[in-house]
Image (cartoon, rainbow, N blue to C red; front, side, top):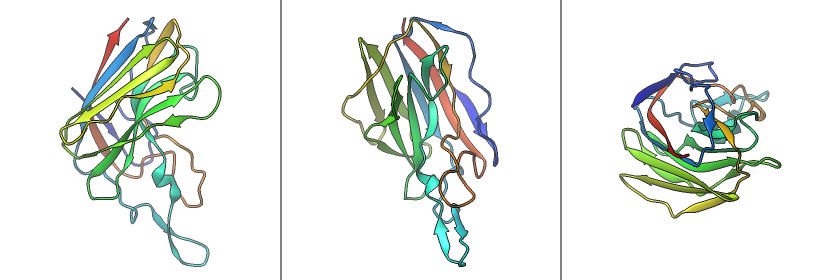
Length: 192
């Protein structure tokens, strides 16, 4: 496993994902765990508005990206199958979901599973015809198979781990990490 780390103000975890092409990707698998100390509470995402009220920045609910595969020639926001996470409500918990950016239209997030820091999880995605088929399991739970419409491609590339979303809600946060966070990840191409 490789430890991926992001610091406050950064957009991408390091090390960066490899940039070489993947010929006829048929699926991928990600194993990993969130390391303690990176979880963020609503208090950490709070700020004072113009009237002096304490408000939670709604960008806390943005899906941060764990990783996946995209068309080699596409942006990460088009024709991408991946897994994403957001911060759970309880201390040191995270929600993980299948996440698809279709060739056209808005992203699709599936039904998440809840994991704790240091809890191992395994995420699988297979491409079959025009579907991305997602499976997720952790020490504490297993999700049903979830499918999203997906346009296959001949040449892909890996999408790495990054703080996603935009700063599109009132408040100072969104689109960048607000503190240091680390995730252990092992990424494998499962079919070609």
